[in-house]
Length: 185
Image (tube, rainbow, N blue to C red; front, side):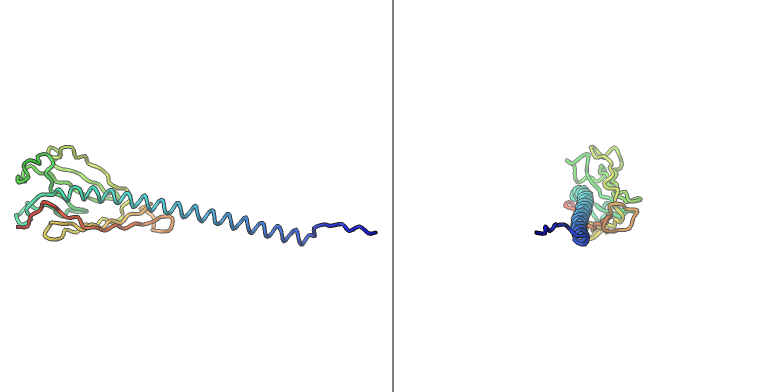
């Protein structure tokens, strides 16, 4: 009786190595793609949160704005270079009809930095000047409805100095902020 030896041929071995290699590479590329998508989604969400917090800050002070928009120099919201200002009664809310003790809260964009300041300092009370975002590339406020509202268009990027891409997401936020105490009578 002749005994047959069972063995693997070189062709079978090459085929099995190729199949295993393709499976490993496909799992690796799937893992890499998943990680990239999670990272990009995380960057976009963080950027959107940062812009939302800046809008929330603006909304708070625009809603508190006071002024008579028909009287010269008494407007509640006015445009300034690189942003806008809001007249707010920060230190004496018991006397809302006196505009002489009001402060101006200013929102401006300079070199991707959206910041807010209050002046004059003596009238600002507990307000603290702050940097709202370091990732804004476009800040385009437009005063509307006789100065009783402001249209805000904020555009930010994860890395502002680079072009928008899958790895450098860009987020645009638009809203209208309405003054609750403004008069146009």
